[in-house]
Length: 224
Image (cartoon, rainbow, N blue to C red; front, side, top):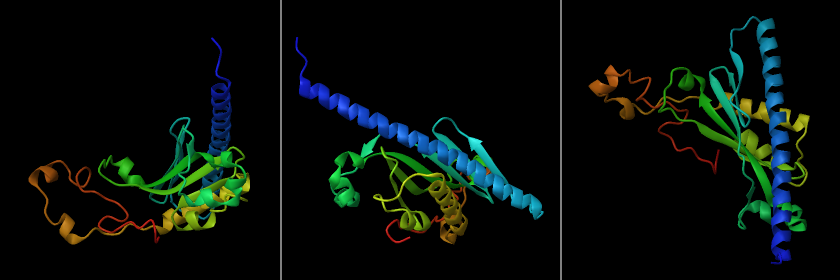
């Protein structure tokens, strides 16, 4: 039996590329982890000095996930373990940076979700969280972000943006800023005016009443 050389070349080249992307993403994720700890420590120190009682907390949730809590909000950073390529129609595929070297379009992804801290504290399983940003990292640690406001508008130059301690601190702080400004709105009256006996007996505000920052309003990814 003789090995098909073109097949083996494809497998080894693609496999090596994906492994390099994974390693670059994992290293970037660990930098996010440490930076989040450091930013919270600075906020906690200022909190102590000024005699405030705002709670700041960092929690590890495994090799690919961590969370930070601040002022009633919670951000979960989660790294996907797989490597992705963008569709042909994605805007990033039209950039000279990708056209020059198509392998640059292969990326790992770090998701950033926002939840209310009370949703986890009181086990309100029906509460909703929102994906506020996706951080794409390629083999050269170039990155860009699809996201909301501070995240999506500030970090979208794939060609020049590179993961570094300074850029990661800026992203973490922007995520905290966006979350802090993303306020909880009261749900429409008609959505909660009727409550069953069963819901009340089972403590409806813990399990059955859905709480979310934009409940009853369209969450517009294309305009926010």
